[in-house]
Length: 556
Ligand SMILES: [Zn+2]
Image (cartoon, rainbow, N blue to C red; front, side, top):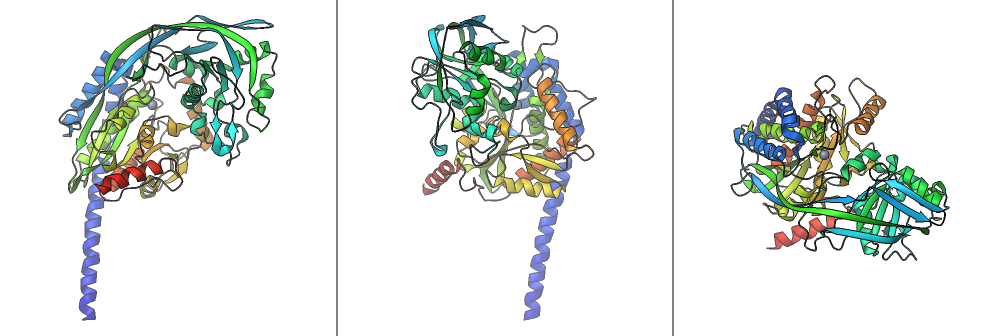
């Protein structure tokens, strides 16, 4: 009898192993279909001048979504939006033109800040023009109200009808104290979006953020190019009339001039701003400014392609990457096409490569897999936010989101970065997939840049859906970490959001990208073959919403 049982058990073990091994052989063979040649071809096409920088609602944008539809069709994927590959995203574009100079007046005279090099800004209000007249300037530290840290930069301050001047990032960046505003890791309070929202709550008419390269995480050029030309929005119900009249930035150099005019010591105020000594003060300065707008309605599209699952096909996992970039800027002499090769032809091409991997499986996965190339990321994550607010598949049936944006171009790494490591159980899948490649996972080496808030996974996280975002590792197989960090920093300062972000066969090494794509394929493969719904970790800000939504949906 014992002997018989033992045989049965043995048979059982052997059959599990056969199933598992066959499965892993199937997975491994499919993963190899994610190949360098095919990936590079897609990337080069999307980053070519013919695609004219892939701006939403332009011929280059149309060409891009058509290319994606054609390539997904060739791979045998199904349309992902009720028979359609496209999801319409209604947008409004506003070209907001401020005056060529901002003239700031004080008792000691005036300071003139030229548009572009000295200041940039816009109004989001959908009106033909807005005007600020002798708006008083108030310095409000980081512009943060955070009761959980006992912090209020607006305490005892009346900013109604005035303009607040605030610093970029949060006090934790300056103190590096991890118990205080997460230390070097940027909190949402550090993002400019938060600061503009808070200024509205405080009743300010205008808000100006002081740019400094280190705490911002990018140079002034990025602000300058990002805050000129058309800005896109989802069609706002209140026509943005609740926003501040003016939302702008000044360079660090301009700030020094303004504070000098006000008779204030800028350096001292900046240092004090992250301590209990922080002081918000009336600067005794004022300025007048007029902005004129050109408003247009337009439509852009998310591209959705689907591989239906088997027994759990009502549940989905989603791969996202934004297809859009900045298009062409006719005001620039010479090369004026923003090819966005790394940002984000690398991620867009990755969608096609990973789809190819899933299609190569002999045994299709259990859950459906949705590949979503989203629009208008560069305009504030608009395409992904639109989908998350108008999902084609219920978010409570969406097990997880894997986002790809600006991938590794520096070669093979022993590690991979998980942005926001410790947020959700998706970390565990990345860890398993990394181990399978003899690699390891690491937290973001530059958490002060707030990357978790800066790409499309965040649109899903805000709606509670566990969403993950990996970036390249820094532990190169032959080069030192310093070399890689240096190369990466150089790329950011010289090429990020510039026409020079082009595919370069001579310097780009995409072999590490292919490894990362196979790793992300593995993550999705595991996620799509199980019935578990990974969640945010206890204490994470997004968990409450997810739990409530999941409870509501399972109750029906
Ligand atoms: Zn990007």
